[in-house]
Each structure stands twice: as C-alpha cells, then as structure tokens.
View 1 (cartoon, rainbow, N blue to C red):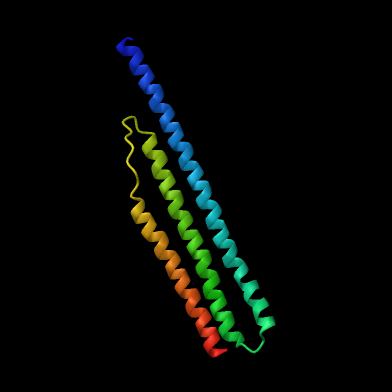
View 2 (cartoon, one colour; view 1 turned 180 degrees about the vertical axis):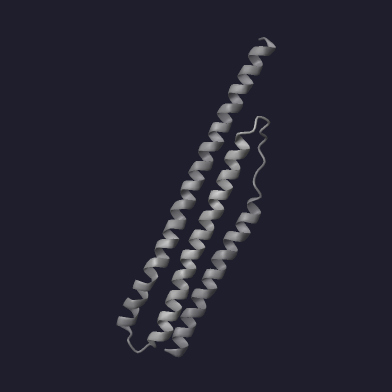
Length: 139
C-alpha cells in the first residue's frame, strides 16, 4: 500500500468521523430543544394549573397565588430560554471545531455546563418551593 493511498484512506476516515460527530451534536441539540420547549410550555401552562387549584381551594389568597404563579411561570420560561441559548452556543462551538482541518477531539468541559444546568434547576426548584410554602402558610 502506497503512502498516498494510506493518506487518502486516513482523510476519508477522518471526514467520516467528523460527520459522525456533527450528527451526534445535532441529535444532542435536538434533545436539548425538546426539553427546553417542554420547560417553556410548563411555564406557560403553570398559570392555568394554578387557576384550577384556586377554583378547587378558593379560601387561598388570590393576590399571593397570582404573584407566585407569575414568578414560577416566568422562571420556568426564562430557564428554558437560558438553557436553549447555552445548548445552541455549544452546538455552534462543536460545528466550528469540526470545520477545522487540524481537528482534534477535545471534549467540551461538560462539567461547567452541568454546573449551570443543575444550578438553574435548583434555583427554579427553590423558587417553586418557597412559593408553595408561602401559599400554604398564608392560605
């Protein structure tokens, strides 16, 4: 086997690996989009859910319920948009790195992304927990 044919084979293998990595990045982005849209949809629907609870338990204060309903709903929407922007940014970084001729696989520091994601979800959970306890305590 000549050196030239080996180089062509290596280039073909590299290009196939890049295509595989790009497709994996697209699948990951699609998954993030799906989850973020679900979170945004939950934020939008949260007001309806809380109104149904108010009809079932009318003795609760409407002012408190509406205030916390908006806070939790808008927090879910903001969290969904924030995570969507991060997912798009990481996807674009992956695609840009694949376009380089001297591409070397370097895993993105998923640790930093994980901290942002978990921190955002914990913050959203704390806002929801405070809202529930406030409604129970004042209701």
